[in-house]
Structures are given as structure tokens and as C-alpha cells.
Length: 384
Image 1 (cartoon, rainbow, N blue to C red):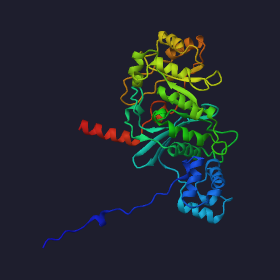
Image 2: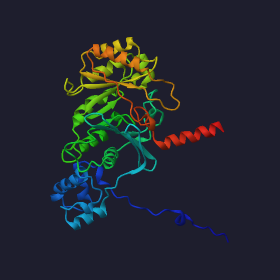
Image 3: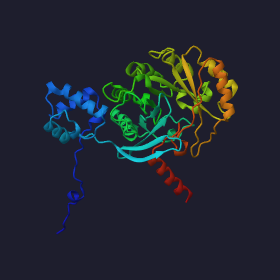
Image 4: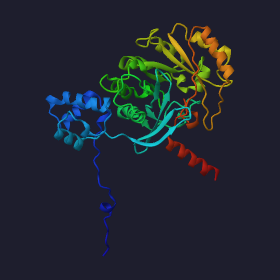
């Protein structure tokens, strides 16, 4: 007589319930979560959510026990139902120029890089990611060589700010002498392909009773997803940055393949219609300087003509090299000559000082460490 052994029970892992994290919820979501978990009656949900909001986003606490104006039994119920835990910091690097980079794991296989850059904006800027990987395949960008894994949630975007403020010791939210004053969505991914979550994150970051970074100090950079520009302005009131890099469609299609879908004429029309555009709310155009590709005096003059009538400034970005890139950075004299032409054309054109190059934290260099490791392993197999 044969015997069949059932090993399913022996190999199955016990299910562990994951507590919802309150740190990335909007005010409305936070109140609803309290009621749904039967921790707070509906009549008191808005008030209690306001208390929690201040503890989470103004004081930065990660322990319900520290919320001293909430009854002890309510704090215990909150701890039973929810968590305030930060995501895992896989790696923290500090550049010789003071830039900091964190590799953050928010879930299994979900890793993002976030960079703090001192002396940018009023005091310092945090470059946050909106996706894991990217679909745009811009040829000069290291991030673009990593396939898209998924969009980040608003909670995962806000967590990047919380991790940075933990490390910078910026809790409670300071009113003056902040080290982190600006947020730029210029990390991994295309923010306009994840606009709803980006907008929700901005609502949390900009709330005056929490992190309280003004929307005028939050910049969203896009490669030119034209149909979403109007919605970006209306939903977020954020400052707009355009990843431009070329003055004609033929070259831009090589550098920024999205241009095939939304060519320059469409992009410029969308920018001119951006809500709130004015001399007080200028568009930032980002232009990476690539030796012998887009850095000639003729291209500088063409850039002035292309932007004519648009309230703007132009950030000239010395190309930041990464392993395997075919591009080189323009010489400093070439960049300065390019800037001089733009200045004569009436446009401020600061040259962005490369920061964090030594830890691959500079513009265009971000890429999940796990992806780098996998790529390295593939190369070793191919070489073997």
C-alpha cells in the first residue's frame, strides 16, 4: 500500500499580518483609517487625526507612546493596530562635498535612492524618487538603464523626506535655520507617470502643521509628459522643471526618446499654458552639457530662441559620468561660453556644481544598488 505524505503544512510559512503605516497617509486617509480600525469613533476622528498628524509630521515620532496628549489606552490601541516604522536604510553614503545618499528598501525588491544636496535652494535640497527604475531610457542618464519596477506610493515618497530629516536631526520641524529647505522630484523615475501619488505626497510634505515645506520650494521635473502638465500645476502648485537637453527634435529624440511622442512644439505649448506661470514662478530648464553633442554656440543661440517669451531660468548641468556611458562632459570653458550667450539673451543660466559624484549621487547617476549588483553578476557570467 502506497503512502503519500502531505508536506504542505511543513513548508508553508505562517501568515504574518502587516500593520498599516500611518506615516504616508493624507489627513483624510488618516481619519478614515482610525475609524475603520475601530480605534477612534467617527465623531472624534478628525480631531484625533490632527493630533497624530502633528506628532508624525511635525515632531517626527515613530513611537505612539511618546504622544503625550493622547490617552494611554488610545495610544495602546493605536500601537496594536498601526505602525509608524521607517523603511530599511540599506546603505548610507556621505560624499566628500557633503552630499548624502541613502539606499532605502521600502518592500522586498523595492529599493530607491534619495540624495540630500547642501547649499542648494535656501539651504539644502532633497532629491526624491517617484518610481523604482524608469521607462524613459534617456541615453545620458544612468537611472534610465534600469527597467521600471513600479510606481512609488505617496507613503514611499514621503518616507524619503522622513529618513533624510531623521539623519539631519531636523525634528521637530524648524521654523528657521533649516538644513533641508527644498524638495526636488529629480530622482529615479518620471513623476508625471505617477502624478496622483506625487500630488498626494506633496500635500503631506507641504502641510503647514507638519513638514511644512512650501509648495514654492517643491520642484517637479519632467522629461515632457505634455498631457499631464496642466494637471500637475492644478493639483500641486509646484514649481516646474523641464529636462530639455536639446533645441531640435532630431537631437532630442536621441537624448530623450519621449520627444518622439511629444515633440518640442507640443512641449513648448504645454509649458506656456502651465498654471501660474509668471516672472515670480519661472520654469527651470535643465540642460546637461555633453561634449561635442549639444554644447556649441549655435545651440546656445537656438536655446534662447526656443524659450523666447517664457519666464525661465536655465540650469546648465555638467555631465556626470557613469560606468559604460558613451558621453563626456563639456569642458568648463565651453560651458562658460554657452552660459554667456544665454545670459546675453536675457536668461539666468547658473552652472550647477556637480555634487556627490564620488558616491554616484549626482544628477543622472542614481540607480538601485540591487540593480547594479545584478548587472555586475551578469557581466561576470558573460565574461566567464
